[in-house]
Image 1 (cartoon, rainbow, N blue to C red):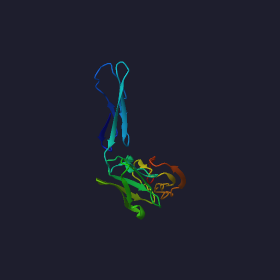
Image 2 (image 1 turned 90 degrees about the vertical axis):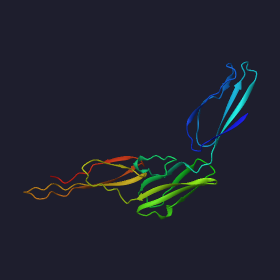
Image 3 (image 1 turned 120 degrees about the vertical axis):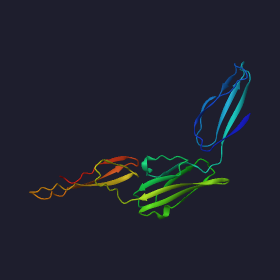
Length: 219
């Protein structure tokens, strides 16, 4: 005996399957917790008679409804701003990029019959850009996810009086430059000397955090 149970395409959870026995001495195999993952799933329940001589099999088919939602979305080697994590029901994300070539968008749908199209990748410029990831499926309202991409040339930190935090937007080698502040002014010896300079390259992963403290002029 088979049953088809419709469930939302985006439903992801762990639910318990329970049964009501006709006889307390029956043995049922297949109950317990079922973790719902992406795609359609089936669960088989086998009921054995009290004497073990007969059995009956029930199959539950969990059928996903049609959907235009994304299961996953990311920009390769980049992290979303503010440590945002993709969620299928959040439709706008901000990204900082220092890449001079086109970005690679990686997207995966809940519904294998849905189609994905990406616009805005061919015209990235320094400054603000908009990339739209559109998902379509016959008979379902289309869904559009928007990536607000700010393409920068450098990360600059000025004196703020406090520690500054930055999340690395993409994996790669970064050149870090630091300039020393000018020395303080003395009424007898005049203005202090200019500060020093140092630079180096370091490999950083997208999502890593750096904490920067910028000093001010000497007293």
